[in-house]
Structures are given as C-alpha cells and as structure tokens.
Image (cartoon, rainbow, N blue to C red):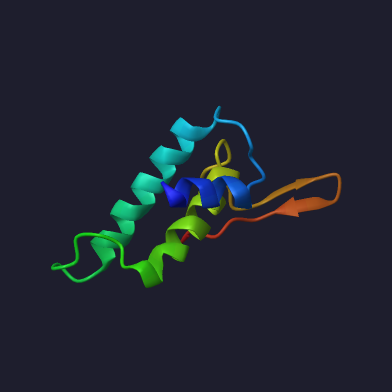
Length: 84
C-alpha cells in the first residue's frame, strides 16, 4: 500500500511496529473522505490521495491526545483543531 509507505516516510517511521495503527487510521480517513464525496464515488480519486496521507499524519500525531483543545507545558502550548 503506497499510502502506508508515504505516511511512514512523512512520520520518519522505519519499522513495522506501528503498521496496524497506521492502517486503521488510513482506512478510517479513507472512509470519512469517501462519505464526503458524491454518492457515486466508491474509492478515493488519485488527485485526492494526498488528503488521506496528510490527515493520517495529523491523526497519528494526536493519538493519546484526542479532543485536546489547549495544553501548555513549560512554555510550550498545543491546540488542536476540531476538523482534520
């Protein structure tokens, strides 16, 4: 799966330990994107594949911090948007 390899490259992951989690994130992202497309679209068009990769990276980085809207630790602040 090219998407999985691209996401791993973007995240600098070179082992296979995270593959199951990444596959779940990618599959859920694809399903969500397809649900937003016209009803006759059953798979992600090539020109939109980058969206799956970008959203998968963002969601992977938020694992364990889902729903956080603001966090500040030692002067470092994190705020996540509600829409990926």
